[in-house]
Length: 116
Image 1 (cartoon, rainbow, N blue to C red):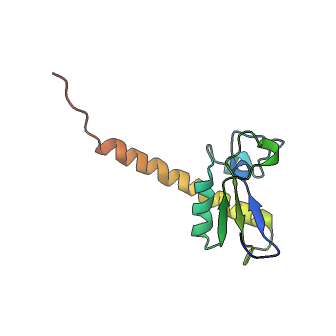
Image 2: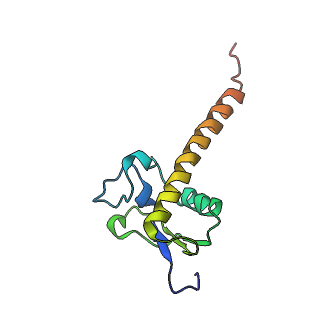
Image 3: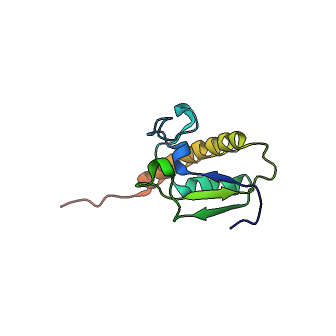
């Protein structure tokens, strides 16, 4: 665990487009991601050069039966948690676009065998 007195905790539910605000989403639907996983948040933290740690065994209290875990982030260089959530949401949206383009490239590169 990070050895800091103060740290921010992020759950994938904060960024999930399928959830309502009441269910735990923290950002507008326009900036949310369809299927948010810990790996996307970890990638965004890496991209922002933030110290972070993944805790897969932890659960989000509003969604404890279906939660993947959480990420603890060292707040150095971040003024507040809202700013951190917005930055990570922007990175994860860009990551979604990158994943789509990679899937399209993979789809074009595959050759279907001819029958007959």
